[in-house]
Image (cartoon, rainbow, N blue to C red; front, side, top):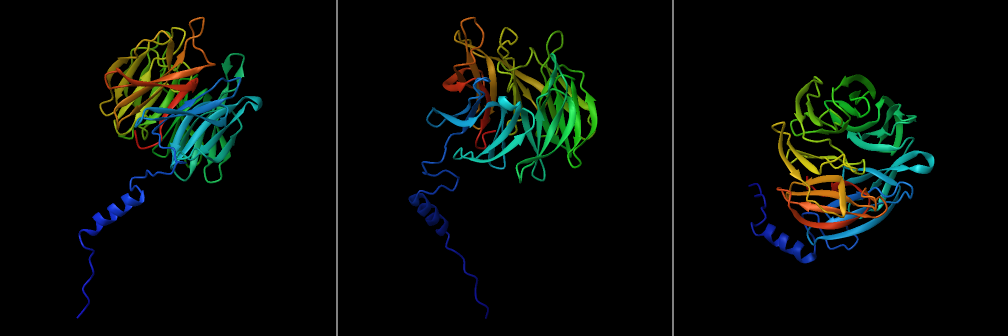
Length: 375
């Protein structure tokens, strides 16, 4: 007679959970290790460009505490999270180049670094441990020259190739085996083959200064065009396979960051895109545009609450779990413009745009990201 299989009693899982709780372990990833950073939100403080003193502000919504962290980087342009690592993209002024430093998001210890031949603007990730980095253009007088995208081997943290694209490349989106690079000065998208790392085509968008590129939940490409002058700001939705524009959503004011950094944010789980009219010197209106990327339509326009001591909007991010909207602002200098040598402020807004709380950031806050699955 074959032996009967043994089954654990039904109370065993409960006993195991109780034992783990008593031992201080947490099945959901938290623990009592004092070296672990338990914050949910990270604000990249670009810093003063001349001082090259970028830093991070870590904010914990649980206890409304903000901690400043000097991470030994230069002027921060952007952040990215990938495979449980935090990528900090910064310019290094002395050599007119840049780097991408890789940090553990739990401890903020550096775990790798990528040297880049040009000042990098943003990084995007493709399959097969490959990254693409858009590089700041060189200039002939005031006119940017065609630039490049660096191809990065993420296993070895080295640049292995470069691809020529248009003028002032900014955001990059990866979809349908292609990398789409927004060339801000040309109003175009360079379409790269993400296997061969070659340019397949260049798409004319008929919009002004495309900068941010996202891939939404429906696998459409969302491109935020800044607008300016007589041209409106827009969000364009493209089919990445046919590369055709599906929808154009017009916004109500020029999109931009007072720090020339993060002016748009996409939340996967909320299926919402946020863009801000935050430029300083009167070029921004303080409006925040919420775009429904499921319906491909403008859902709401909010107004950042006025404050005589703050100017512009320098970064934006949305936590879909708590339904909190984060916007960072710069202090005002004696002439009424932005002050780039003092700490900024982050406002936490509810869905209606009312201030829930605020916290001080470091110098020139320029990018908002979430260290946990808060998108």
